[in-house]
Length: 363
Figure (spheres, rainbow, N blue to C red):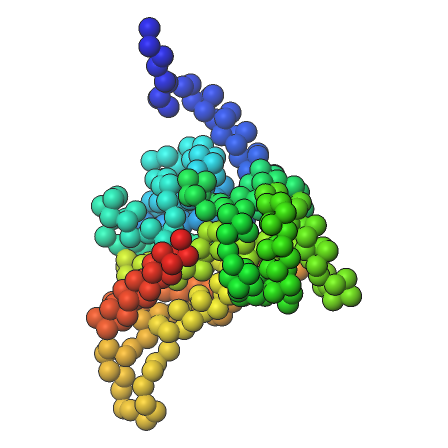
């Protein structure tokens, strides 16, 4: 007799609940959502419509998503994540909200494609929690952390081919210097890149400990800041492997073009380069760009975003003490106040095209 897989309906509800409890317990231990209450209040304010459709573009272990579902029982949630393992754990964790929740395995820069496949024209809100998840940091075989040895992988989506080891083996000294300097803001970028080129002639760099030891040898001890000297190099490699900045430049205009009037975009970032991209994108739609003294603002020049976070929200000292990873967070949110003018829509479509070209060039 052929093996048959049991469907969810075939499993006793008690067994499902116990499995979800175990998943929730694991998630709670390895992931603490940052600025959780603030994210909920910004994305789903009390005056928001009763049955909003929102997209969690970085589902992770569903810490924020679960809070969104519990805060607004009528919410419909699309959860996107490029990490298949995280997506599966999140889906188990959200089993009691299965009728509200649609999981999607994709990169968040595929926002348009995801909505098209689901037959969705517009959404009432979108949330992004950028950077590295606790699951990825804590898994040694993913190679994200400089604190534990593991393969130099760093892929958020393990179905893609490019890894950190590939970059270290094939990028020129000039390209390595650029990514360490631009993405890691590493003072000794050129010296580290040259050492990598010399090292790979003798032995390929395949494990995190090899790279940590190399950086430790290269960076002068008298010029080191706090923490592990390899942290900036690891950060830069992770951003390059996953094309994180081009992904962000691509998704922000995609969201804006699909946002219903009154809908909101809420973003948590942990890196100054990410925050700069977000700040500029939001500011572009929040200010009036016209000569001083005009009696009224022409319709096509009116601000289409309203800053609802009033700049960047930061974690409190208490939250940082509970969760040190929240120390660098910057939370920003805007609300769409009127339909996007045609000129703005065209500009955003151009931005998406440029970001996609950047992703292709990186590959």
